[in-house]
Image 1: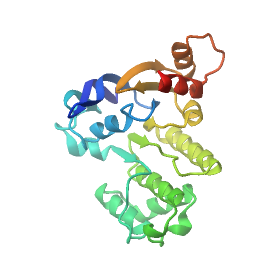
Image 2 (image 1 turned 60 degrees about the vertical axis):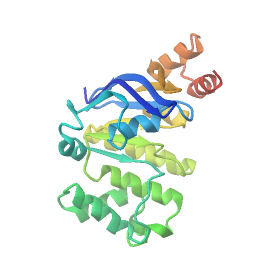
Image 3 (image 1 turned 30 degrees about the vertical axis):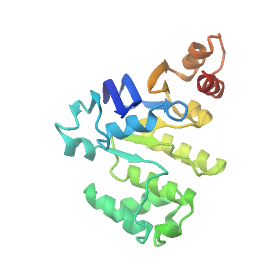
Image 4 (image 1 turned 180 degrees about the horizontal axis):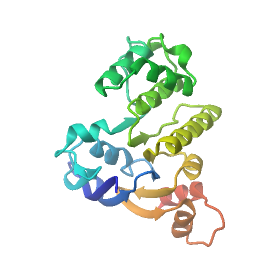
Length: 243
């Protein structure tokens, strides 16, 4: 398994954000991590990245714990969120060049230009990040996420701030790049239609706990307790949020 999370728990004073969570993800899977606000999605990803120390439990990536092989693990993964910030005075090209050097990317400029073209923003390469729209910044973040051709990609609301047409384009690019490279993706999102179309399997969270796992159709049947013919994750989301 590429990801192994075992009894992961995180307390913030008296609030438990992640409560005894265990799951695994196989190489090449696209797995959705979904649930209402406060379900524990971002906290789980931040613990996987080593940005937050778990209260208890373990995370193993590529077969190793982060504390045991940090450099190798971080070199093999990447992450993006529309809420992350780039140095605003640097241009798009300068920002991505910094990340390319951190990841020791060969032929960095050619790689960056290829990604900018793929995500439709090559014309912005010399523009300071401070002058980008939210949607443009989101696309830059996605370029950053693929810059090292990661084995594991952690995406937290990757299409937030994008209009519907741009979201569809980005989704198609993600699926195309995942198919060509075999990248494993953990996909945290509130967009249930998107998750339903992209993810092979879903881990549904609520209040820090896993309430169901399975394909979109299996999740629909488990939580709604009905024999549905088609997945209905938006209904599932509303049902869980109200419970």
